[in-house]
Amino acid sequence: MFYGNIYATKSEARVLTRQQTRRPAPDPNRRPRRDPLLKVLRGKQPANLEEVAKPVDRGSTAAVRRSGPSGWLQLLGPGLITGASDDDPSGIGTYSQIGSQFGYGLLWTALFTFPLMAAVQELCARIALETGVGLGVALRRRFPTALVGLCIFALMAANTINVGADLGAIGAGGELLSRGLLKHQWLVLPAALLVVGLQFRLPYGTIFRVFKWLTLALFAYVVTAFIVHPDLRAVVAATFVPHLEFKREFITALVAVLGTTISPYLFFWQASSEVDEMRAAGLLKEQQRRGVSLQELHAARADILVGMFFSNLVMYFIILVAGAVLHAHGKTDIQTADQAAAALAPIAGPFGFVLFAVGLIGTGLLAIPILSGSAAYALKEFFRLPGNLAAKPQYRPTFYAIMAGAVVIGGALNFVGIDPIRALFITAVINGLVAPPLLVLIVLLGSDRRVMKDKVSGPLSKGLTWAATALMTIAALALLVTTLLAH
Image 1 (spheres, rainbow, N blue to C red):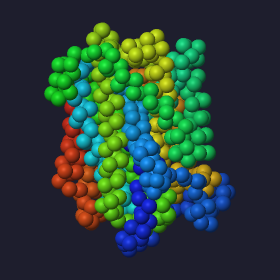
Image 2 (image 1 turned 90 degrees about the vertical axis):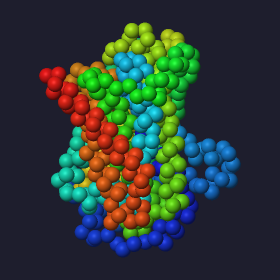
Image 3 (image 1 turned 30 degrees about the horizontal axis):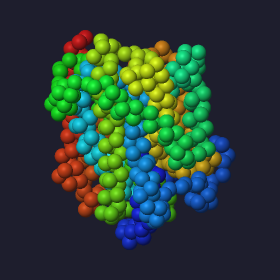
Image 4 (image 1 turned 60 degrees about the vertical axis):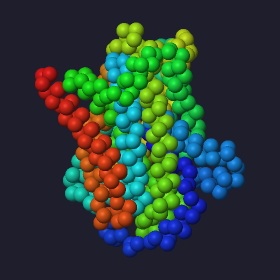
């Protein structure tokens, strides 16, 4: 899950560069509307944009340079940690189930998804940096409203289900830590209230700093891989030689892998975080934000590559460890958190459940604000409503109500009787089905010279993003075909 760009400015010359590349003002009819809940709540319409903003603290490039090597490590920290956080509860559950069911059979997907993920996220960032607006606005201006609306509402549904699955995973982590004294359903409501409270009171950068260290538990999978001594020949072959089966179970697993790595909510979050960063740099008007320099693009690409590399690294080792520890010993159908946690027994012994639970809780607390936030960004951009994560809730209640609604509805889904670990896998499959139509629109938008000017996608970007689109579309169609044939 890449969202590193929201934490560190890429250049102190950002404002000057933008002011030198101003373009004509956008259509005044496309200005954000007044927040509809302000009138209902009889709230105050802010007199200026500065009154709306919450404090935002981002690193200074100059300060980083002055602090030497440790400063540069700090600058890379968000990209590294957030890359690992792409393996959120949905990822942990999905990769664990896939490794246990198919062994090393899907290791090759980590190698293939890395360039595809990086290309898609780079395109979303480039669209935002060039147009100065979020993905929802850019898509609506280019494509029919009904088509974009259908894709965004599908995204909303997928995100809400994903939020529910991640809340259930946090509860499952709590149940593991309490050794069953607390049931995971009992912990869903407290977790939901905690997330909503944090979103309403703190900037996401603060939430990130508080919980980011919990995600380091995921690197236990990397260490475990060297402890269990897997068959090196089998691992190398599975990594570089794709293995395919035209069976419903295998195709479902492939769709789940693609859905939890190239996730639709990441597209909107990437673009919106770029716009928010520009706002934090003082570029409050769209006309100031339009146009991107090569220096900014290079910085964004480097940040994205770091995040995606570590995301796929952790993904690879979760599948590898689950295959070596679970599949090799006949545990091919894990359905519970206890069963999934057994993969870490070689490194932590009887306390493997602690590492697994901490990983679930930490990545869940980081992922849920991203899921609900990206849903709020997509919906508010589609309806041209004001609001962002830097805004105070009392001035932009609609934006925060959308986030809170996604968390509340998602939390309620935990009481339909599906085990949290199984729900995480189902969520990944849903994301894999929602992503293809969105990707088609995004790739077409990035190739449109009327929108992107000289920052239109080049041959490499087009090749990789179309490959990602084609792969996810074929996998989704194959899943539908095999499902129909099975019935």
